[in-house]
Image (cartoon, rainbow, N blue to C red; front, side, top):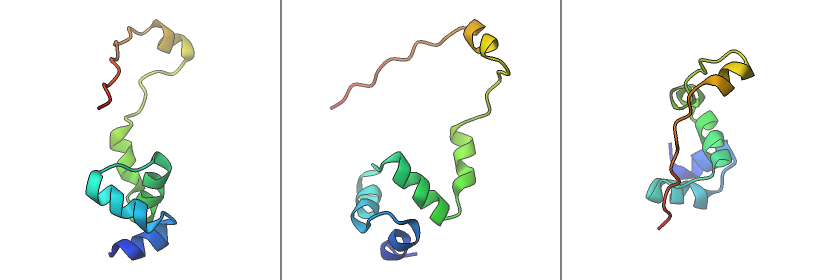
Length: 73
């Protein structure tokens, strides 16, 4: 599929498609549109595994991992 066709099918600008292929950077909204245009939306399941909690109390009781902010260059 060409970049032009992907841009048309996804509704994402051609410039954004080109930048995504060149740099790997894209907005989340555009990424979702591209994924649906490529029929790859199920691949998001690997990025967001199912939660192991059933209630908010279980979430609050779970030990929290400390997440460090990424340093921007």
